[in-house]
Length: 348
Image 1 (cartoon, one colour):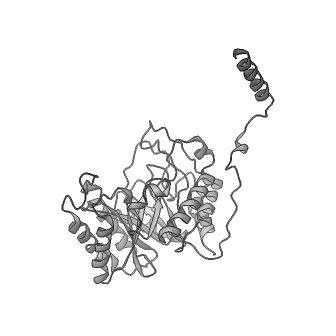
Image 2 (image 1 turned 30 degrees about the vertical axis):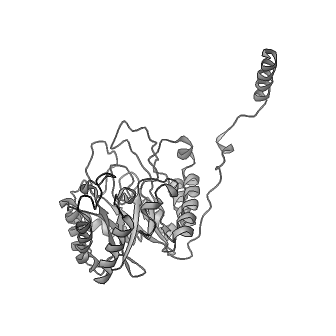
Image 3 (image 1 turned 120 degrees about the horizontal axis):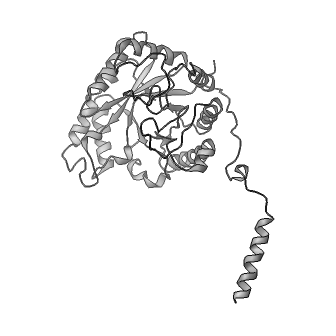
């Protein structure tokens, strides 16, 4: 018996020596990304974040190191975004309220006097401290949750508030962690009460990164209108790093069909021109995606290939310097990211 195993091992060794070296091109998802022509404008939203200027940031913003809510910086940001044909900024809206959020929203409304951009809100419920054991209803916060949307009405009443099919767009951060005893009932009551006031909602659930859609479908079905994956890039998988556009293409195709076929929920692709997780966490083991024209071109065309009914693409972000995902111009690359975004999403 030992001789038989010895012969098998020798044979396998000889066979393996005769094989050609395996290269990256042999990978299952090694294929070229093709350009999707812009035959109709895409709607582009950009996340606008609260910034804390880390000493690890190497890029030098053309607008300088501004404070959150600085109106001169906001004025310049609106002009830059308009030059790239960005349709709307998406601002965080926290419950309970956070001063930095309010300052940024006020600066935008004060400086967007020419209505160059629309805007929408990203609902942040993190301070509610929801867990599977301490749910929204269990903490007696359901009415607070619904009231917080009613508190948004002054923003909804702004002529530049973003809508889809006449419905008011609100993103929900970490929607897959919105722990309720009866999630469907909570969303149903929210929509019913807001509709009674004349405000139909278009709710988009943000999930940090891609997972197989069945994992969190119970947080979305009979609840949301759309799903997006906020962070496409912060991972430590080598093959996903090397073939990131192709990986996202496969993920988005599968998720788009799954959500739409089963529940009529739209997938909204989220893209970024680059990312450096080590700015915020120098010990991060995840990969850096350098700012590269070919990469951003590829990821935008993957997004266009997998677009949903509203033809919306979200960019994360306009100004998150702590992860180097910003579109905002810097000394090293100027406005090149903004220009590429416009060229790939607008007809003119």
